[in-house]
Length: 173
Image (tube, rainbow, N blue to C red; front, side):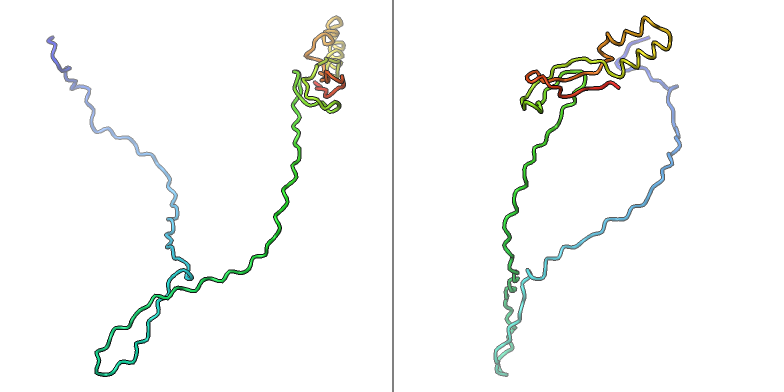
């Protein structure tokens, strides 16, 4: 086969008159937008007044009436009562308590009023005792003491490092 500058024709692949079903689309008619015409207020439009022609003798030709532009009267403003300025709203201090969970957090101590990072202490809570009791009832005696050694079962006490008071207790159950 000879190599030429053009690829060979593919006559057997030509497809014509392929018809696809048209998708059925439900159309909703929408109201056409209303056209509005801007009309300036009547108080701002100039008033045109025709001047009365002066006495003209009969022999003189009739002159065209003179049209003068008369400015519209200025709108009368009602007196505005001067009110004293409104007092500024009081600035309330918004305190957002950080969510203290199983990690130490930065917060302001309520007792010594210092910005501190809390110290954590794990204490036995309801979850430890519930797991211990359920393992004891199931008859797994040696394993019922395991929750007392696992920190992820215990409650977390957050303390202030300066005054040593309990700030928050995160309870597991």
